[in-house]
Structures are given as C-alpha cells and as structure tokens.
Length: 59
Image (cartoon, helix red, strand yellow):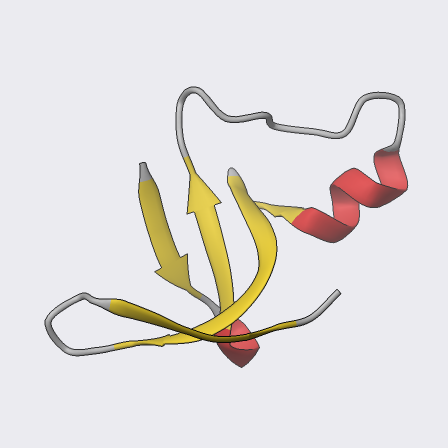
C-alpha cells in the first residue's frame, strides 16, 4: 500500500488490491481518483520521517 499527502493536505491511498473506480459512476470516480490513487477524504500532514498525521476530514 502506498499513502501520500497531496495538494491541500488530502490523503491519497493506492494499492494493487484496491478499487480503481466507482461502478457506473464516472463523476464520483473523477472526483475521488487521481493518478492511480484514491482520495480518502482524510486531511493530514507528512512529517520528514514519513509518518502521516490525520488532522481532519472533508467530503
């Protein structure tokens, strides 16, 4: 599993075992998937050591 913090502090998650789209919902897919990552809705920050702290949530 790969996790990263992207623009605006959004937490993005990718895994070869995770979904890659919402079934029959291209609008939701476009809103929540970017470059192979799922935007979880969680917000956080990544420390220099790689640890990610979740600080909030947004829809």
